[in-house]
Structures are given as C-alpha cells and as structure tokens.
Image 1 (cartoon, rainbow, N blue to C red):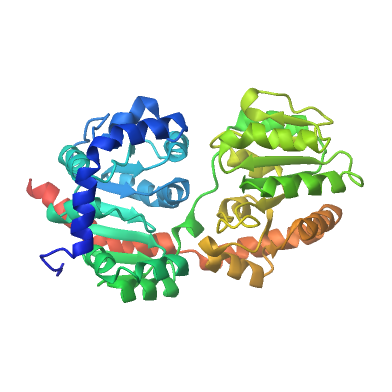
Image 2 (cartoon, helix red, strand yellow):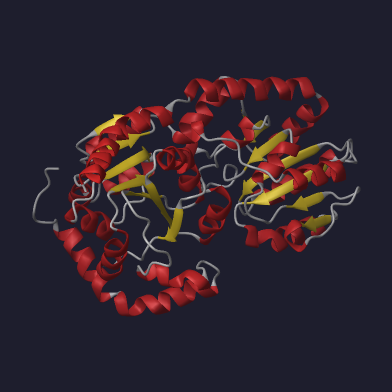
Length: 434
C-alpha cells in the first residue's frame, strides 16, 4: 500500500475529537441502552473488551454494520470456515447480534464492533489480532481502518457499495476518504457504478465481483414451526409485508381491508424491520377495525384473524415459505428498499415501492425481466395484490422470472473467493512456517 505518511487535517481532527469524547461514551452507551439499541449483557464489547477467547490459528475478521451486510457475508464465512480458518464476525446493532445466533455457521465468533475511539480500537485489535480484515459494503470507521493499517493487517472491502448520495457527500471531504480508501489493499464492488465511484474517491485497487446477496442461500426454518404454521393457515390466501418501515404498514392494512371484501379469509402477515414496533402496528390494525395478533406475545393465529404481526427475529424463512406474494418494505417509505433475494429463492412473487436505491441494480434487473413489480402507492399496491390473488398463474410467472434473473446475476461468491485466494494462500503459508 502506498499512502501518505501524514494524515489529512480532517482525520487528525477526528482522532483528537474521538479521544476528547471518550469520557462521554459511558453516558452515550447508557442512553442507547435505555432506547434498546445496546445489549446490556455485552456492553463491554463496545469498549473493545472481548467476551470470548481468540481462536487459535489464522483469524479472518469480517465486519458488517447491520443485518443485511452480515447476511450477505454468510456464504463467504461458510467457505472460509470450510478451509479451516477461524472467523470473527462483528456488527453494530442489537438486531444483527440476535440474528447472528440463528444465521452464522457453527464455529464463527460474533462480537459487537467497538466504539471508534483509539483506546477501544487498540484494545479490540490487541486481543483478536486478526490476520485479514474483510469489511462488507461500506462501513469504514476511521480509527478502525487506521489502526488496522498500522498493524499491517490486510484490509479488503467486499461486496462494496456506494450510493450516489454517499458519493456526493464524500466528495466534500476528498482528502479524508482518499486517505481511508488508500489504506485498503483491495476493493471488491457490486457493480460498475460502485467501482467508478470508489476509484474516483481514491481506492487504488478496485475489482467488480458482483453482489454476494444474489448467492445467499434461502433462510433456514424450524420444520416443526413451519408445519404448525401451515396447519393453522389451512387453505387461506396469504400475503406478507416484509421488513416494513413506519408509514408502510398503514398502506398494507388499508389494502387488506379493501381486499377482504372479495376475499374474507385473507391473512396478511406483517414483519416489521424493527420488531419493537409490533405493538404500535397492532394498534393501527385495531383502529382500522381489523383483528390482529402479535407473534412475540404468543397470541394465536385464529381462523378469522386479519393481521398477524411477526414481530420476532430470524423468522423470515418461515414467512416466505407460507406467503406466495411478498411486499418488500423500505420502498414505499423512503428508506432505499430491502433485499428481495431470500423471498424470491423461496418462490414468492415480489412487489416493491419506488424507493429502492440500496438495491437499484437488482430491482432494475427484476423489473425489466418482469420478475418483480413496482407499485407507487397504496392504491397501486391494492390493485396488484388483488390481481395476483385472483390469478395464481400471473404471480407464478413473476416468481419464475425472478428466480431466472437471480440465477443469471449470481456468481459473486466465486469471483470474490478468487480475488481473496492470494491472501488466503499467504495465511496458510505463514501458518505452516510458524
């Protein structure tokens, strides 16, 4: 890596500010704890204090900010574990940590990422001593990057993504982002557009490998729970709204209320992006005159139930297997959309709103192949749901086109592994030499 020895002023100021802010971090963490954004049993991990021992041998560190990044990396983690490398996975949200228990393969160790101050970062790195760092998508913390580079840990961005909005924001601080990207050994991006943005911002070694999310396996399911769920549903038509955000549940509830006039046995399952919002969504359904049950409370799925709120973690695999039609949230509300691949792999026909910039390449390909459909508002959502409920052949054609599109776009996992192979070979040689 050829990077300037002297840091730009902005990064030096960031380091000074992060040191000065250290006395305020306990109060910051307590506030987050009260808001349910931290795990009280694992708060020390945010200070860089490990809660587990370091595994022996070469250790590959994989970091993803939240649920989506972590799940995208699961196939990669599985392949590295299969090659007898130890794997440490870090993330920053309570939801991702809870999901790690269900979705990370056996042998992977999960920790919360430390708060980005020099003292906490050094404590974290001193314990884990990673031999290779893989950062997923775009979560690049300055102190973490700088400290890893000083320790000569190879740093590789995998599944790299940079939205136009983030690109424009970083262009206002070109020296800072260039100093950080210049410390990356390799930048593996999802698309040509991502590659061009990273190159323009200063990443020296960029390759296009594709989107790892397209190669993800279907989410797992508890077969006994699936059997019970299907038995309770019986012959009812089911639609699902997955990973929804505030404002979208109202549209789904209103659509259900109109649709049940022709289909009185219809069941709508809502899985909010943030499960703690379940009671509030239930109140919306009740205010609309609909019957509702919360899965988190163990409330029964009765034969005449209108809205079933799956306000639990790690159960989208269950929901996608019972719902032939899925509306992907974050897309009517302006949140950039959610990943449709898991629903598609399990045979669902997918609807989405217009705001899907987080997955623009995937949704563009799906829409062009008629493997998904965009709905602009509540009226359009209701109309398309009504059509697909009345015409199973139409929704089946959409689902089949989606699967074909995802298969055509796949291959990112193998391309990523090919790019990582020289680093993995080096780790094996060092292990033998030691």
